[in-house]
Amino acid sequence: MAVKKPSIHDIAREAGVGVGTVSRVLNERPNVAEATRAKVEGVMERLGYRPTFAARHIRTGRSQLFGFLTDQVTTTPFAHDLIKGAQARARQADRMLMVIDADGDDRVREQAVSNLIERGVEGIVYAAMFHHEVHVPQALHEVPTVLVDCFTLERDFASVVPDEVRGGREATERLLEEGHRRIGMVTNDLLATKYPAAVGRLEGYRAALDAAGVAYDAELVREGLGNADSGYRFAHDLLDLDDPPTAFFFGTDRMAMGAYFAFAERGLRVPDDVSVVGFDDQHYIADALRPALTTMALPHSAMGRWAVDHLLTAPWGDDRLPLQRRLPCPIVERGSVGPVPASDAGEEP
Image (cartoon, rainbow, N blue to C red):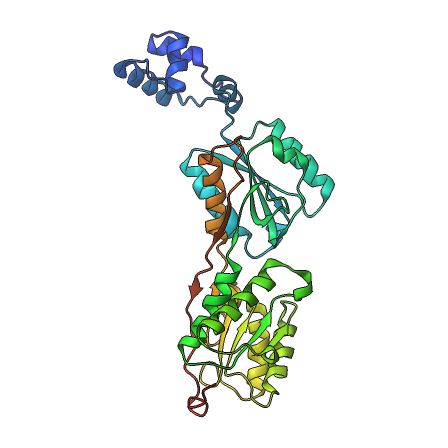
């Protein structure tokens, strides 16, 4: 048999105070004597009283809830870090996340937004599977919303995305630091898609070369598809050049993994004969490769934290353009980068 839960009236009777006093204690109002507050809180703890969500919502007009609407994010390797970062910041502020995966279905997405608003969420985090432009339900304009790993063309929502250009630049700079000047790059997607990750990382690659006084050579660039086969195929292709690269920057760790197989077939050792930097920091790939892969980490945990923090702190409802934030992609050093092989060290552009 279920045990009857104590009510606010039970607390008031046991503490010898009025129901209004208990209510003020529950709502952390200042006009309660400290001795009385301590007595009421002691009774609540002794009786195991927990205010119901519905009652708290009615009393305060606040749900203490944030919605977290994903678009197939939970099917990606990055879901854990993204949601964990958002949860950690929400927990600090005594908020809870309601996570819903729309699974790429427009109807599910529209219904999810309606359900979240009906439940009185104080804000919504809308997270995409990868960095790209999105078209979001119109109803999101009714509640504070932050977009994660995506943005709208109108830039009418606050958003947080990886700094793809800076990530591409720093990946290339790491190879330049070791003296490499012939650096091959395989983009993580076709440039015609105009996805920010592919375009931005290439832009960063070119910026790093320019800053180092190294002429950009289109012959060293290939447009990949992000998968291992692209890395394998284009590594062989670039190695067939008359003057092949001594280092490679791959737009994904999966492509870097494919390239490792190509290098092994050529009898090349990483990093003794060729250096490699990847992108994404997919641990199950980067840590498993031998040697382990140096790569740029996507800031998923930081983006999740930033999104919730912005919901908590941003002034909503004014006429200012919503903030568009780019977060850095830190390099994760492992063992795939080394100096230019001795046979090539004397060659300067």
